[in-house]
Image (cartoon, rainbow over all chains, first blue to last red; front, side):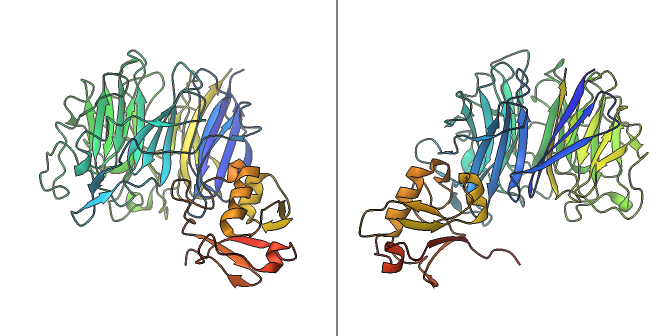
Amino acid sequence: MSRVRLLVGTRKGAFVLTSDGTRDDWHVSGPHFAGWEIYHAKGSPVDPNRIYVSQSTGWFGQLIQRSNDGGLTWEAVGKDFNYDGTPGTHQWYDGTQHPWEFKRVWHLEPSLTDPDTVYAGVEDAALFRTTDGGQTWEELPGLRNTKGHLWAPGAGGMCLHTILLDPSNSDRMFVAISAAGAFRSDDQGKSWKPITKGLKSIYELPDPTAEVGHCVHRIAMHPSRPDVLYMQKHWDVMRSDNAGDLWNEVSGDLPSDFGFPIDVHAHEPETIYVVPIKSDSEHFPPDGKLRVYRSKTGGHEWEALTKGLPQENCYVNVLRDAMAVDSLDSCGIYFGTTGGQVYASADAGDNWKVIVRDLPAVLSVEAQTLP
Amino acid sequence: MIRVALPAHLRTLARVTDDVQLEVTSPVTQRGILDALEATYPVLRGTIRDQATSRRRPLVRFFCCGEDFSHEAPDTPLPDAVANGLEPFFIVGAMAGG
C-alpha cells in the first residue's frame, strides 16, 4: 500500500509525519534540528529519500541539511550562497538603493530529473543552483538583472519563495518574489522576463500595473498543464492560461482575496485551493473561521471547506509554503498553521482532521507519496 | 590544549557533547582559536563568523574568564588562563528577543 510522508518546517525544527495510504493514523517524528528555523524541506521527485532542508537561525546563520535515507539521518552540506560578482543594490524601504545581503534560504526545489540538482530561492531575492547534491551553490544571476534595482522588500523580507519547474519543457521555469513579482525563464535560468501583465496593485505601487514590484505570495501549477498558472497575490487570486504572459483575476466570490498559499488538486487541474485571510494588517481568517476554499472551475466560483476545521475563535495564519497535496487516488491535501496545527484531508478537502496540533509555528509543508 | 565551550546548537552541529579541545599556536587569539575550531569542525564555518569577512556574527559573543571579549580585535592575545587551558574560551549566543 502507498504511504504519505509530510515534511513540516517550523520556527523551531523540522517534523516528519508519516501514514499509510488510508491517511487515518499518523506517526510524528521530530523535532529534527531542534531550535532552528526550518523554512523549507523538500524531497527529490526522482529519489524521494533524498531530502534537502533549509536550516537557519539569526544567531548562527544558514545551513543546508541533506538526507539520503528519507530523513533518518542527516548530513550538513554546502552553505555558501555568494552572489555572483559585485552584488549591487536594490530599492530600500525609503526609496534609496541598498546593497544585496544574503539572509536565508526560503525555498528548495529539487530537479525533476536529477537528485543532485536543486534550486534555492533566497532572501535577499536571488536564485541559486547546486548540481552536486548541495555541496556547492552558484547563483543564476540573470534573474537579478531583470530590473533588480527596482525590487524592494515587503514586510516579510525580499524573499524568492516560489520555484516552479516545467515538467514538459526543461528549459522553462518560473519564480516568484515578494514585492518584486513573477518571472519566467525559457533558457534554463540564464535570462528572465517579468510575467506581470494583468496584475494590478492599487495603493501598493506608484504605478499599479508596473512590470516589477507586485507582491506575489505564491504561484501553483498542475504538472499536466504547465502553461496554466494560478497565483495568490497580496490581494487578488489570479490565473494565467499562457505561462504568465497575461493574468486574469479569478477571486470571484471569495470572502477575502488576500492570502498566502495556493495549490492544485493532484488529478483535477481545474480544482484549486486557497485559504482566505482577512487582510494584510489582520493575518487571520475572516470571522475567526478557518476555511479552505476550493474552486472546481479554475477560479471565480468557490466553496468553503469547513468540516473538521475550527469555525470559531480561530486566529491563525497559513503561510505561503505551508500547503501541499499528495498524489493518491483520492487526493490528499495538507496545511500547517502559525498556531502549530497540521490539518489533513484524505478526500480532496471535503473532510479535515488535525494530525498534530501543538507544533511550533508551521512555515512549510511538503507531501511525498511513497510506494 | 585550548578548551572551547560551544553553545548547545553548535555542539549538536559539531556532534560533540562537551567542551572541545584544540591545539592553537601561541600567542592564543580569537582568530587562532576560530581558525583551529573551523579546521577541526568544518561544519561550524560560517556559524560563528562571516566566511567572507571573518567578522563575528552579530548575535555571537566571546567570553574569557568572565569578561566579554566580543569587541576585542581578533588578534589580541587572550588571557593566560585561556591560553594554558585552565579556563575555556566561551562562544555564546547573544541575548536576542524580548
